[in-house]
Length: 311
Image (tube, rainbow, N blue to C red):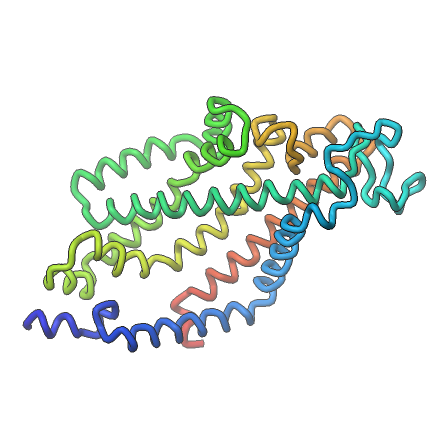
């Protein structure tokens, strides 16, 4: 078979007519979106996540008080619905008289930003390494697997704590610590997917017609593993948010001057009997955010499942 016949094979969609390939991609995207829209739990998770993200974005507008303002005369005030509470502090105040609701709203900024930035960097860096190792094989893949085995010998949270302790508190150091701890999952998934794709007809045909390795990885392999990457990114974002809260709880987060949900949990730990709301509200909103992400991630995984495409 000549190279011209191979290049126009249906198994090589990225080398086919661009209009046909674009039309096929649009149809697949529309079908995936419809399946996702029919999943009520996924839609519920997306709405809750977007609501919290919007709350974080509009924090300066909707927060009733300065999250760092201390009013010692109003310390440990209960929520408005309890005896002794007031509508001035709907969710009460902490041990320094700071408004709980305002601190929750501003704390959402840290969780959302750290989650998005960390997951994005991990996905790009880990997927690139996994695609290169899975496609090239040989010594490069052997060294990559060796590195993965060494990295995976340490639990994610333990490694994140160690990295944060070395780097010190601060937003950039926190993100760097989480990235250094979390890139492995993406690398493993993409490497396995690429290894199963590199001998497929459309990849072989691309090599025959002289397409470079870098172009094959970027144009033919990466688009075919975007689905698993997106699903993994959504599920890993929940893990990153929990890790950020844990590090902030331990004093290894973004710093004491910035309100975070994990730090609020730590502040309320000593007042569980006297002022339960200090730790309860941060714990509830962390749980709600993580569950919403997991609901949407599960729905996205089901929508991208090829076994469901014809249903």
